[in-house]
Length: 302
Image (cartoon, rainbow, N blue to C red; front, side, top):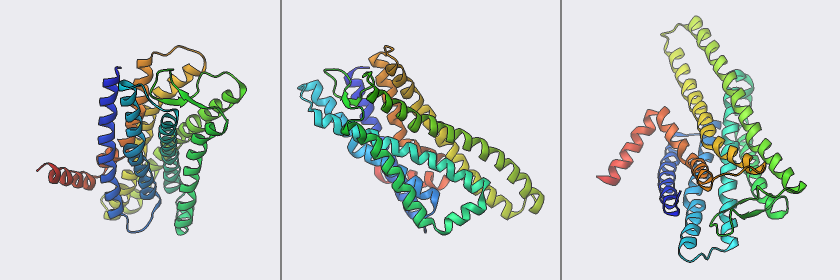
């Protein structure tokens, strides 16, 4: 992919990410009368994605522009961009993982879930702090000697984790990173999806038997749970779509396989599109958000 093509792609991602995540944040703030697990986790995702669109990706775009015009891209600017993109992306990944666990607790262990809800403020604050701490840890560890950031090529505008260094220090970081930030989250997501799918089927049958298929309580309860569960499942598949190609490319680089720069760039851009999947999927599941989005667009362009 040419530099110009990459420029345009990142600009489009920035526009979509910023606009859609602002709309989602406003919708969630208006909708949420008290801090519940799922809305707050979605809010955390939207905030991270918005920060990517407002600061991380524009900084990377600025580096691309400087490299194409003057070839004057400082190492500090390059590394700061990498840390921001990397850290915020990991926070989103961990949030989706926690959303998967939240759905399992809500559907399969409702009594435990209600018990956690009674102390929801402490639990929410603690959970979100852990997520941000994990993202910061993995993004900042290379700054303190566990692996390192480097420019992808000598004349590159973009920095990334050093995937090619072969010493024990770097290998330990990359292997631990791959397991902790991809294999474990994917395993949790897939397991959660399986558990929730089976539990939802049993719940539907039980509700129909107890209060009848056409009872208002049964319909409303099933609709709410199905919407929230559908949203989580869609986010899991969106995560796999966005990050699996990039993870595969990184794995090939780790084992000394040659990867085309074009393939690497496409995989990286595909991962960046994950920054606006959350509002798109939320709009797909909830009609009210779609109507609000249409109203916002109408006010802007009419």
